[in-house]
Amino acid sequence: MIYRRLSKRQKLAMLWWQQPRFRGRDALVCDGSIRSGKTVCMTVGFILWSMAMFNGERFALCGKTIESLRRNVVLNLRDWVPPELSIIERRSENKLIISDGCGRENTYFLFGGRDESSYTLIQGITLAGVLLDEVALQPKSFVDQALARCSVEGSRYWFNCNPEGPEHWFYKDWIAGDKPREKNALHIHFTMDDNPALPPSIRERYERQYEGVFYDRYIRGLWVVAEGLIYTMFNKDVHVVPSTPRPYDRYYISVDYGTANPTSMGLWGRCGERWYRVREYYYNSRKEGRQLTDEEYYAELESLAGELPIRAVIVDPSAASFIETIRRHGRFYVEKASNAVLDGIRDVATRLKAGDLLFCDCCADCIREFQLYRWDEKASMDRPIKENDHAMDEVRYFVHKVFGPDIFSIGPTA
Image 1 (cartoon, helix red, strand yellow):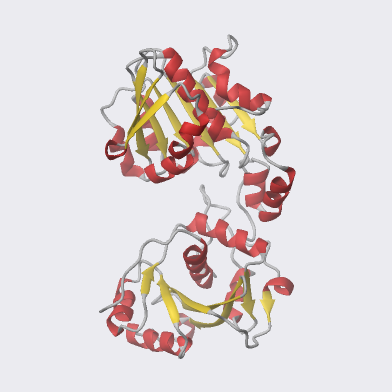
Image 2 (image 1 turned 135 degrees about the horizontal axis):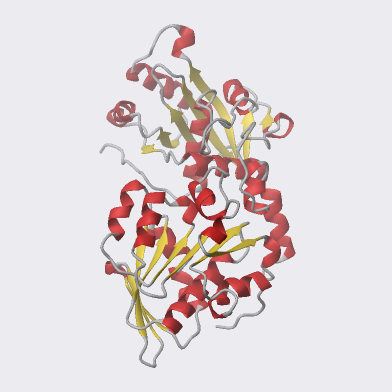
């Protein structure tokens, strides 16, 4: 591999373990903005360090999931590390074997820290070091267990992440105040300025893409609290359009199902490169004084769709009985929605900023919720207030379906 140009921080993240001033540190913590080169420099540094300092040892590469770890790290590894290093992947065993051709060989196990139960996956193994990619997305129990496995003399911890809120456990344990000194860690904070390989035009595009808390975190690299309106970029003058006929060529319906809470359904149509929320159905049982049955809601779904060729109905994954009702009628292909709230909010914000989503002025309840949907400032972790969020939820479901990976499918009846 040829390294064209590295910033001072990138070089430090890669080679800190060689420098007398820092080689006695137990950990490296890299945080900051997206696209700043944290992952590539840390990954290369981790491999170079482990191959230079150890032979015949075991290490861990950890991500939120093994799939994301493969996408972010493993698939690029052969392009990143020096060519004299040989990499063999044993995919069925979730491990890599790396050798230098001179008798040194180490094993690198892949682990995913998806949820609180993930710590059991890494129990029992003895490690000489661990790299935790996107550590802020992993639960504390998993990370603590990974660190506890590093009992070989000379073992080190390598962390990287983009910022979350200031109450996040990783920030409080490893970054806030004097924590790096207490943990004997080297903390390097990155910005996009630290990535000389990023063209100015691409940097400007990223800066235009985000707003509010996402801009502060992903562009400025700050651990800031989420407060106030969530979709600050929503502008009625920009995003709300007249309800006039358009040559839509593809249709979806998204549904957030409620019994005591409101049920919201949105009909989406694609015209050109943009998606329009063409019309909606919104029913608040508390306000109306009567709850509807699954069959009654299905009749409203049929009415919303009319004779249009709906490609799929994307439904709140917790609405099992309503999903079964739709499936039983056999007209619509139904999918369980992804309910990753924070990822969904970020994706909707990105599409609003890019102008990919527009809302016909007949969608009054959806437009109303956009102007009321707020962060819960009293919560210790990022989360929206559970009010005025029903149309907001099904907008997230739709955006994940159209602009994100397509999983959670349920096939139609025969």
